Image (cartoon, rainbow, N blue to C red; front, side):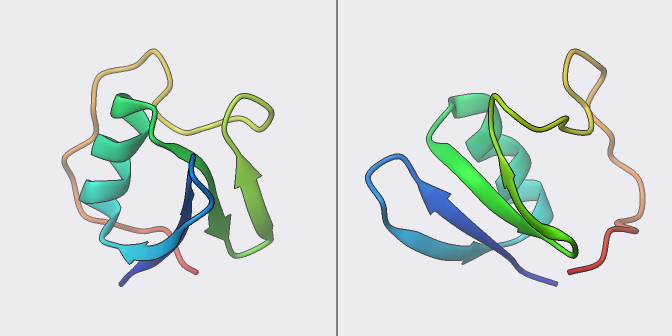
Length: 62
């Protein structure tokens, strides 16, 4: 499964969930697509914020 992301420079991309986690940590993504719309970094609640990184089976859906 790939997730659509928007980078800080306005570019769009499709990435794997594990890559999204890395991009969020690096603070190079401003938003990403969820099943219910776009999640904006710094505005919307993000799973895993201030928590131990989850390494289990991916259960999120687009």
